[in-house]
Every structure is written in C-alpha cells, then in structure tokens.
Image 1 (cartoon, rainbow, N blue to C red):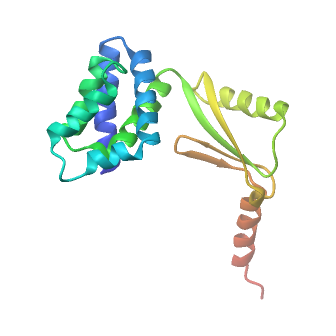
Image 2 (cartoon, one colour):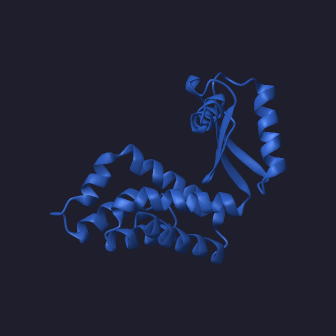
Image 3 (cartoon, rainbow, N blue to C red):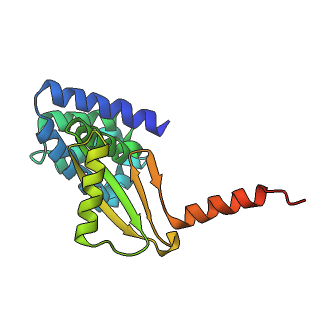
Length: 182
C-alpha cells in the first residue's frame, strides 16, 4: 500500500514538474524538504499527533516551508497533510527523486565488495555499468562487506548482480548436496 501511495503522489508531482518546466527546481526543493523532515523527527511526530487538528498542522507546514519552497511544492505539502499522508512523506519524496533521476538518465548503484576498491577499480565498475545499462551517469555507493569473501554485489534499482565468492560457494554447496552417491 505504501508503494502505491508513494508512486501515486510522486507521479503526480513529477507530472506537475514536467508540465511547469520546473523539474530541477522541484528536485532541489523536495530534496531539501526531505532533509528537513529527516533531521526533525519532532515535525513528523507533530504531524502524526491525533489531537492536533489539520488547520494547526497546515499552519506548521506553512511556517516551516513558506519562502523555502515554491508555491507548487508548498501546495503539494498541503495536500499531503490534508489527505493524512504524512506517514508516507519520505517515501513519496524518495520516489519523486528517483523518478527525476531516471528521467535524466542518472542511475543509482550500490556496489559491495569484500575489500575497499581502488580508484581505478571504481572507475572500471562505473564504466562497465554505463556500457551495459541505459543510464548516462551513475551515483555510486560503495560498501565493504568482508562476508562476501571476494567478488562484487551490484544493486541497481531492483536488479542485483551477485558475483561474490560467497554466493558461488553457496550455489556449489547446494548443487553438491543434491548429488546422490550410490
């Protein structure tokens, strides 16, 4: 359900941004608004408080965001509050930001390796990803997990390429366990 909510609202904002020719402006404003919500847990608690009426919640949103974001984004925040969707606000923002990046051809890749990669290795991974995907650039997130033993695990959107030694060993182990010795 949360995914449907975030995509419905995120798509609506995306379409508005395209229609108004303000994709970059909305992207920056939503990214900034997301950070405000993430850094101020009290703001979300206030919006979620059942004893605070909507008018007061709207006044708080108005006070926090007026002058910080465009009238369109402020109006969007009003809709979220009016429709009681504040629990989904960061998911909506995340969806919108990913949608804009996809539209611009920017991919997000998370690369996990057993040991830190050198600059040359990182450049080679990014080059290979650019050659094998539809993206024109990538935002790379490198992580270290000694548990994969060796190789790489690359996650782009909902796709995973797992060439880690751990996975190869696990696969081999499963195949060996199926062999019947007579």
